[in-house]
Length: 162
Image 1: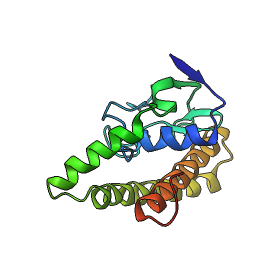
Image 2: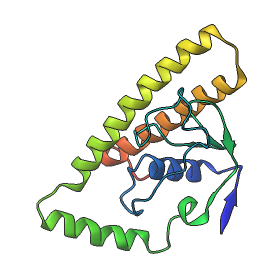
Image 3: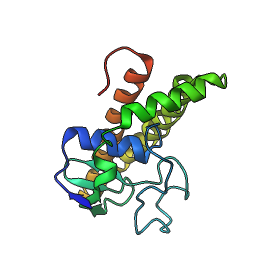
Image 4: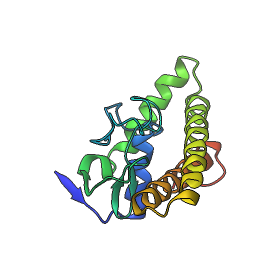
């Protein structure tokens, strides 16, 4: 089953956490990527930023502005027993001496650094061109940064789950 844009704020948050592989209650999978990703202007394949970014209007490629308007429902909405599954996973990880939040926080911070660099690069190119696709791409990186920052706040325990 699929969900079609517009995506809710909660769906955008969840979809981007999955795309950036910073949501531990969702299995690792191949993220949504741009059909133009072989183009020289895109990120290296399998890099952290080599994924489509969810926005309320749908998916946007942060390199060429290409769009997609759907996601799998299983990605957009948490499983009804997700909290129970996550508690089991956390217990297993902590029993093995790995601090799940610290490892995930490190992954989130690495993704934030990558998207900050991408955003800065796109912002520079916007100063040289008023291209709509470039504007959509830059806006998408800003949405991803907001989502990653919210995830970091949750992992740091500053406030409740977003």
